[in-house]
Length: 482
Ligand code: ATP
Ligand code: MG
Image (cartoon, rainbow, N blue to C red; front, top):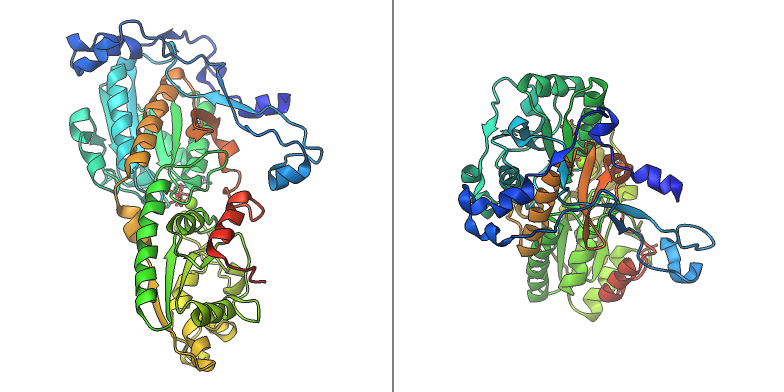
C-alpha cells in the first residue's frame, strides 16, 4: 500500500521550492465576479461555490472485488487475489494555487500524429487559463520542432482565436515527430519565459514531457509541465479511455459498414478493413463489437495463422461457403509474427512495424519480380487472400478499405468533445495547483492526475484473456486461428 502511495504521489513544485507560498485561487473568484468582468454572465450564478478539490482527494483505481482467482482471470493482481486499495489523485481546481496569473506565460504544444479532439483540448486550455486571469498564452507550432526551428514563431492564443477551432479536425498548431534535444527545449522555455507547458501527445510525447520536467527541476526552474494524453489507439495505462478513441470507433464503424455492403453485394465478396492500432487493438476490437458486421477481427495482441486448417484463410473459405460473404477487420499492427522485421525507425525513434493491410490487399506476384526489399521474404511465406482462392478454384471478390487517415482527421464526436473539455480544464487546474510532470485522465469515470512514468511504462494492450476480447469473439463467431 505504501509502495502504491509513493508511486502515485504527484510531483509538486514545492518539493523543489519549499518556501514558495501558496496563494488563494482566482478561479472561483473569476467565476463569481465574471459579470463585472469580461467573462460571460452565466458564471455569476455561483455565489457560494464549493467546487475546490482537496490535494488528498482520491479516486479508487480498481473497483471490482474478485472473490477468487478464477473469477478475476487475468485481472487478478496477486495469486491470492487479495483486494488492495489503489488510489490515484483527483483532478480539479485547488483553493490555493501556486502561480500569480499575471506572472504566467503558458504554452501549448501538440506532438505525434493527428487525433480527433486536439483542437477541443487546445480551446479549453486557453479558455480556462483566461478564466484564471492569464493573459500571456502562446501555441508552439509543429510539436517539439517548434522550439528549435527559427522559422516557426509562437502563435498568440486567446478565447477569440480558439473560439471555433473545435469545429474542425486536426490541430490548430500542427504536429510533428522528432525534434530538438530536451536541453535545447528547456533553453527555449527559459528564453521565452514560459512557466506553464501543456503537452498534448502520446507515449513518446509524454516521455519528452517528463524529461523536460526533470531538466527544469535540475535547473531549478519554476515550470509546470502538464501532459494531456492524445492517443487514438487508447494505449495509455490506467485510463478508461483517451480522447479521440470514441470518435475513431464511431468512424471505423462506417468503414466496416461500407465493407459489409461491398462484400454482401458481390458474389463471394470479402471486405477487409484496416484500422489503427500499432501495438494495441482496442479500435479494431471495439469497432467490431459495435458494428456487429465483422466475421474476423485480428489484433496485434492475439497471434494467428493465415494458412493451415485452422488459419484465417480456411475460415474465410468456410464463411464464403456458408454465408456467401465475409468481413475482416484488422488492426495495422496485427500479424507481426508473419511479417518480415525491419530495423527502420521514424523521426521519433519508434520502430516502423510491418503493415499487414498493405500485404493483404496486394495481388500475389512471384517473389522474383521484386528487388531487395522486405516483401520478398514476406510474400514467399504469405499467401494473400486472392491468391489462396485462385489456387483452390473458388471465386472471391476482395475489397480493401483503409480509412485510417480519414479517421484521424475528423472532428471529435459529442462524447470526445466532453472528454476533451474536461481534460483541458483539469490540465490548467493541475498547473495552477503547482504540479509538474503529471498527466490527466479519466479513471473509473472520474478525472485524475497521474505521475507521467506510471502511465507510459508500456503501451496498454488488449488482454486476450479479458472479458471484452471474449465478448468480441462471441460477437464475430471466429475460432482461434492457431
Ligand atoms: P503517437 O501516438 O501519435 O505516436 P507520440 O507522442 O507517441 O504520439 P512520437 O512521434 O513517438 O509520438 O513522439 C512525439 C515527440 O516526442 C517527438 O517529437 C519525439 O522526438 C519526442 N519523444 C519521443 N520519445 C521521447 C523520449 N523518450 N524522450 C524525449 N522525447 C521523446
Ligand atoms: Mg507513439
